[in-house]
Image 1 (cartoon, rainbow over the protein chains, first blue to last red):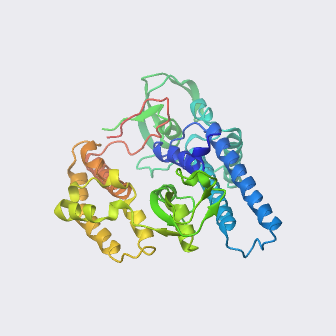
Image 2 (tube, rainbow over the protein chains, first blue to last red; image 1 turned 90 degrees about the horizontal axis):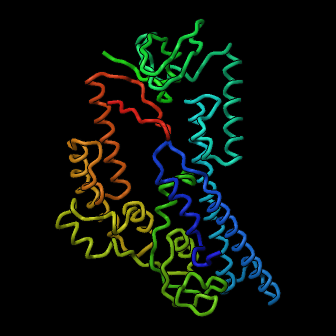
Image 3 (cartoon, rainbow over the protein chains, first blue to last red; image 1 turned 30 degrees about the vertical axis):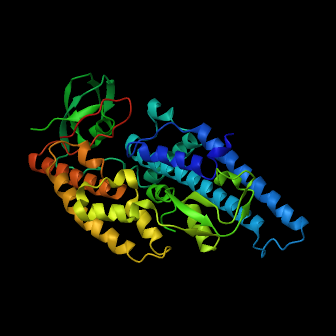
Length: 203
Length: 186
């Protein structure tokens, strides 16, 4: 591992990746960099421990002595905390985006997003989506994920942008072919519009 | 700490400041590129990230000096024409760092300098954001610090929302999923 990159620089790179992504969008989980930061934490810890042992061998009070070894230990400790903060922020922000996605796309993630998640994140999304479903079921299957924009009219006119095929809309089957125009209930059309598969026709 | 997870807070604390070590520190030779042993000697001048410098300063292990972006040269440029100074290249987190560093160094004028700079630049940022014809114009943006950029973008998005409300149109905003074509809502 390149030593020159220590003292929180790699951790900061992880956070910079988050900052440079488009708001609300996920980048691929950077396994490599994430693990490097964890390795760095271990290096800091072992160096910290060595300095502790050195002080103990010299018969010094580790807690209260303020010599060069103490300040070395302090710097390693602070670097560890900094790395921890960067790792936590990385996980936290991504989890935030996942939570908001479950309101928009429902239980099944589009494959292009799923490919960007780590295994833990896939698990987290699944659990969060089920928790949401469970909650909605308790209220007599009230769907909380629709009508995110207060509707002005219960029905809207939409044009289908992608070939969705024959789907059950309400109580009948409708052929949602590409470029076809339909008059649907807001609540039925909303999930498709959110995913960019349909667009509202105005005027 | 309400901003533990705040990305801007984390990145603003990564800005480098020059410190002079008042006490030696063993086992951390990598911090000082000029050190031959695995130790930073007392009196060594090292550039540290602010998060580290701040903690060491609190424990009297280092003495922090004022970063160059708050020096006389920048101050003179700001007094001449605040809006045209390229603060982004000097310090992208100019205001955040200034606010954090002001209580730590022996310079009581940083606060008023920050206020002066911000108030004189704000008018330019504000008027450009509201009159810009296109969604993104890069020329004014590349001079702005992160905080100013956020203000600029907020003003732009509120203008866009206002225009959309005036013109009517779809009230649904599509979630832009990567891989799918982006639909403009305007």
